[in-house]
Length: 201
Length: 252
Image 1 (cartoon, each protein chain N blue to C red):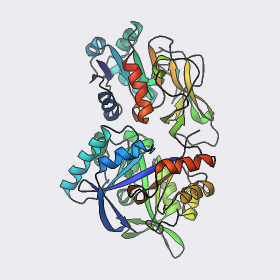
Image 2: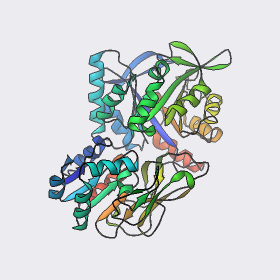
Image 3: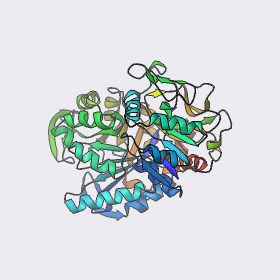
Image 4: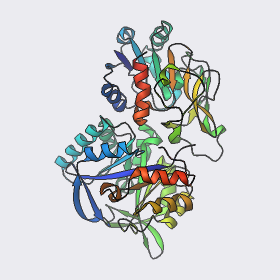
């Protein structure tokens, strides 16, 4: 059972629908006990980093997420949920993230002169290392992004896309924690391949 | 880089896809779910659903069709038609939409753009504009092209962006259904004035029209069409292949 973390941000319709279509059992929950009982965790999210972290803390979810990730449970953050896995963001001030994957979140605007922000649309995803959630993904396939902040390509980057800068598409702690800046649940059949691989970890 | 998008548009009335010419003369086509499956298989980059029903029953049917599609097609879905308030945004987002386009509702009350952008994010709010030349001026029309307004298209697009719209769909009434090509002049005027993505709509009749669009208006982000896809005159895959050979980045 996958716990899809519900902390009052974002629209979970397509995420749960895509998991259902793959036959991956899931429950949308904001209950720390249910998250601890699940065998996998997905942290979705849209909106602003600071607000979202505050909501996680208000609901008493920060500690359970960190401790469950520490136990080696497969953990996937999507979009803002991916950014929150990292150490820090500079979106409207400085905000501490969950610190599960090394790397910092920075504004796209500072790196992409003349390009539209938010970056919205399909971009090619290129692998830089072998990563378990990319097992079924065709390298160079297109995935769907909607974002204004990003994690620059670094040691944690498993795959990236080019948008003025090298944007981390997939980040990974080398073990059980993964983040996708794009939306696998909105990235057509190739996106589903990433969720399927996560479901099989 | 971000690929140029090809977007089929499905006008839905009483649970069926329909298509008219110059906004009139509507005829029945087929099931939205069947069409959505076909377009997904052809690598459509997004689907747009316009609810053109007036009745409450039609609206309920529309949201159930939308959910049916959203449960099995995993690409971005944009919904328009009958969107006037933040509650309308809420209703379609809960039924599986990712983006919501507002047209007459925003002309009547522009604050709905800001309210929705604050609640759901700019990326969720699409300003759709129906535009026609009147005495050489690009005038914005309300109510599906039936009512001329005081608004001029370029300034309305700029205002929409400043209010929080994250994307603009520009429908040229002059070229809609005529199949003689997109309205290059109108698109160029709007694309030059805003920084948010612009979707071209109205006038596609053959593959060459898509080539012409991306050649002549490189800032445009996407092309939307309806009837040529519905009736199988042009396939999305063929358009993308042709664009790619011309050096336009597309998702294949």
